[in-house]
Structure formats: structure tokens, C-alpha cells
Length: 151
Image (tube, rainbow, N blue to C red; front, side):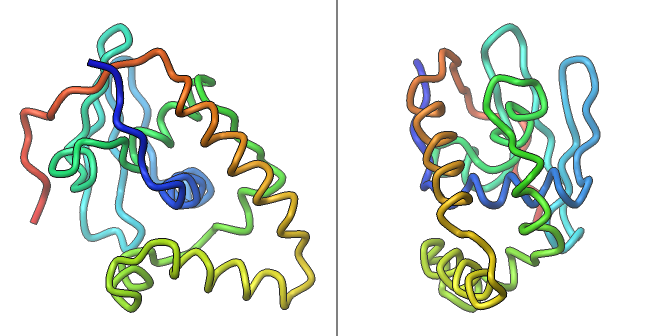
């Protein structure tokens, strides 16, 4: 079992989900709205086994941003409120579509815009790298959701 490590850019998307208050956390599950609010994903967990019906988790088998965001809210991954605001209000669906789902190019565009605005992107990159290393060391399992991704 274990986990399949996601592209690092999914951490930026998880920050957005939390910053935009798109997560409703309950005892053993959470609803996570997409960045354009057109879809709602269901993250479930029991003990240390997680599942989600977002496309990345369901089809690709790696941790999608909904699970990463939930793990942040549960304190199993770091979350730095000081950088969260930089990812507020980003329509990831639109941005990723513009970049033909090359997530690194979408994040590069955001980071370049932040840098032009005078933001210390080194601090952001350091924090994202820290979370990525934590994901690589996570002692959790994932399984495929019983729910298909929303259309």
C-alpha cells in the first residue's frame, strides 16, 4: 500500500483550497469544492487510509490536492498561514487548462506574478519543499474511492 507521491504543484492547489475556505471537515470525511466551485469532491478516511474522488486521486492514484488539504487541516502536513493568502482566489481549472495541464507552468506563472509584486518567493518555495518532503515520509495509505469523479 502506501502512497504515490503527487506532482509538487498539488501542494499549491491545496493551499488555495484552504485559503478559499472550500473545505468542510467532518469526523471521517470532508467535502472539498473545486477552485471554480463547479465540482465537489469527497475525501474519506479511516485510521490512516484515505480516499478521494478527485481526478488525480481516482485516475492517477497519487494524492490529489483535496487529500493534501485535509492532511494539512488535520496537522499531518505543515500548513503556513503566512503564505496561504498568496494562493487565495486562484481558478486552478482555468489556469491548468490554459497550460494544457502542465502544472509546473501554471505554478510558474503564479510565482512570476507574485515575484513581480515584490513577494519573497523563496519563503514560499521553501515551505512547499518542506511539505513535499513530509508527503514523501507520510505514514498513510490510499485506496481508490468508491465514488467516481464528478463530471
